[in-house]
Length: 287
Ligand code: PDD
Image (cartoon, rainbow, N blue to C red; front, side, top):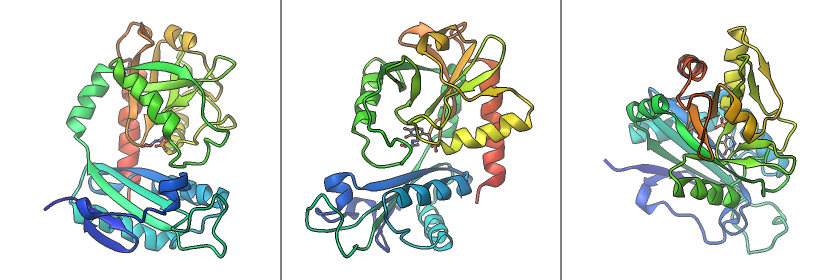
């Protein structure tokens, strides 16, 4: 059985799943998305992703295409039809199909909804987490609304490619003051020499990562200290550990920044512990 995608109310073979050429997501990047990690066939951090989806849509005045309950049912059906246990679920909602015009169609058109499901190899991911990954830095060049999870990801794609070209896994954007904002598809963290965790506050122009938020709950429950303030790449290199968070990376140790080792250049105990605590919590709360 091949992969199955969802397009505007229908489940179709992945290879035959198409949207209209005048879909505003395709022509104008006028669309938002969410990515859920799947554990044991269930959606991780459901509440955080739904809340952010509703917020992203609201910021762009796109209607929620269906109720949360209905959307949950369709998302779960997409997972079931793909028989994926460990993987990722992608949902995209665009403003819909309309004759090309920068301004919104009036009256509004029906939003387009698509979903895809892919599997991940958790054993390979755990091995990668045990080795740690490298990141590179790149100047922040994105728009001023990175809090909205839009498909306008060209700067992120270029940054990720810059990382990939040198064998790194992520690119960290660095703002004009020299502080890391976030990764191309993840949030950035360090553990300083005193053992304090640090990650940038969400008043900055960054995505309010759902994994970041769930991990903050874990951290507070564990009674660990966390400072929500920015750090520079130099501070990351001087830190004892660094890591990234996201639906794809979960909690992933960073062992080098621009070729310079972080701490002793090996994944540290804090990130390893937080990874396993996060996964435990995500599994327990998945729907
Ligand atoms: N990316 N920052 C950016 C720019 C992101 O694109 C993402 C997620 C995150 C982490 O957010 P979360 O913890 O909610 O996944 C931070 C997804 C996974 C993606 O684009 O594939």
